[in-house]
Length: 306
Ligand code: PMP
Image (cartoon, rainbow, N blue to C red):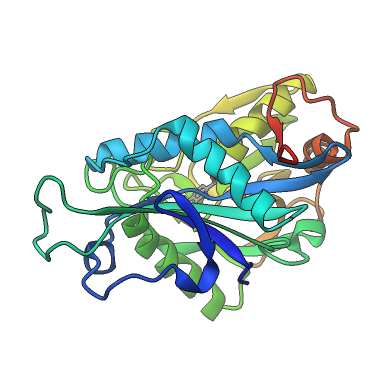
């Protein structure tokens, strides 16, 4: 997984040199915020997908927890480009992380306590393996997402991923590729690490961003691409059983990209294989990276050679 270099607290350094102390606050209390971004190999060279939007979300997450990143958004964007250049990568999954460092073990750190910032790039193919082509077998988890007034879901914080681990582990134990969680209100929310879409009567339906979900950047991109294809997109409350009568179901995320769902709780979705709207959206989405979909939104940012 490692690459020769990463960026840590303002400079590029060898991967192995970026270590932390066991008293690091984030290890004890989950006080980190992070991003997951992708760089695609495009005809113009390696290009980030929606880098500025990811960096903006990182800063918004940090703001929720009063974590002072200590660098500007421009500096973080530049550092993300630098990591790709330093490692001479053509494609990558990139993980910027901001975390409370070693400076005392009180739950609420004193003002001025250390904050570490690191950005690492690694090679990472399809998140759920061949499910991206064949479709994933998923279950509805017995674990629910935290209520909005417990852990804020718009903040992509390390601590939130304990919920994701419970959902994913239960799914894997049951022989599924992934788990979908209900929200605090008993309605559909999202997957362990993906947003959720249903196709019903030709319309695209997705739980609202207030449903205790991460406001996914892939979700937003898919909604834009769908509208561009002339599809109606509705953000609305959906009960669990909507999954069982959907014509198509798919999940979105930076790691998962667009992953079709072929069964839910062992009931086949539609014909039990990826449906035509999911396929069309995949084609439009992946077309951004080979140039067959015009990037009319300025989503791609080519990594300059120097
Ligand atoms: N929900 C959760 C819980 C996630 O971890 C992710 C992955 N970041 C997503 C949704 C999808 O978000 P995005 O498209 O911005 O990667």
